[in-house]
Amino acid sequence: MRNVLTALVAGLLACAAQAQVVEIDRVDPQALACLQKDGPAIRYPARDEQMRNSGHVRVSLKFTAPDRAPEVMVLFRAASEAMVDEVNWFVRGYRLPCMPAGGASVLAVQEFEFKPRVTDSITWTAPRAVAAREETSQGRPRALSCMRTPKEPPEYGGSTLQREVANAFVELSFTAPDAPPEVRMAYASVGERQAKLVTDYVRQYRLPCLAAGAKPYVVQQHFQFRPYGVSARVFKDAVSLTSFLSNMKGVQSLRADFDLNTMACPFQVAWTLGKPALDNRVGEVGKPDLNRTEFLTWLAGLEMEVKATQFEQLVGQTVIVNVPCGRLALVPKAE
Image (cartoon, rainbow, N blue to C red; front, side, top):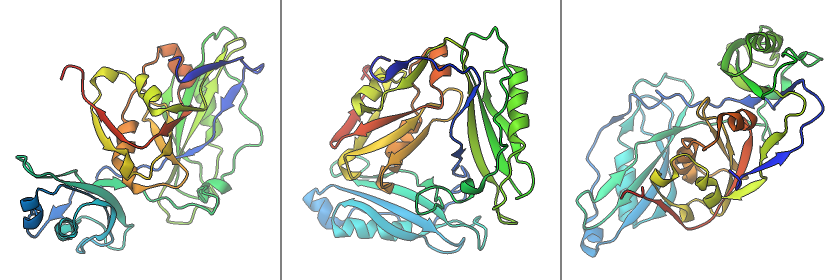
């Protein structure tokens, strides 16, 4: 871990340290469960097949009604016009019949590869739903800016004998502007007393700007309890993609094939440690780009190689990864 970690001297306070509240922008895993495809199959354009031309097309699909074709936008193309036309005709046959009429739109990203002289000459990924976020001009969720919390932080509820860092991650679901949130302990390594202290405290939160009848607004908050004399480990400010990957569990067996040149490279990714206790969080630094969807999803599924004590010190912390241009091609060592 020496590549991405550095140590800091512990602070003087042993009270709970609250991390920033994070909006949970969760994509409904069933958003595309009823996806149907009508119309003809996709074909390799005769001229391109004859000339043995390859192609790569990435599109975004916006579903606005259950009986309507998605709105299609080409995000990236390294392909002929005929290939792009084939993709457009193919995806316009999609329908989402279980989508509620008048409900929120569903956004997805899909990629297509045209490869001559192979058994499966045309391959494509499954459409992947992505989340759309409403933000202020500063990029901060509007609802989060009106959250009301107690004036005083919670009192330290730990034992004086505590020697290790402990954490509590709570998930809060607001359903009404004047009601306490529903609270779920997403992960806790603290004792029962500290866990109750945290849950009682966050039940005092209110979200007065939540509109009546709006969908639940979900956030996650991290509380860390660190005793006197325990030094803090933190990630370095920024690391290379190579250094970052070298610290992943099972690095020798990782498989990947991403053309980073198609993703507005170079760019930076903010990767927040969660696994194995929680989901990792992955975000883009600067202007987001839907072309990175599959790559970011892959990064989110990685698990860092850390000891249990290191994990408790680092969980919830974010490392910035510098992603270069080029191609990321990883093949398991056994192959």
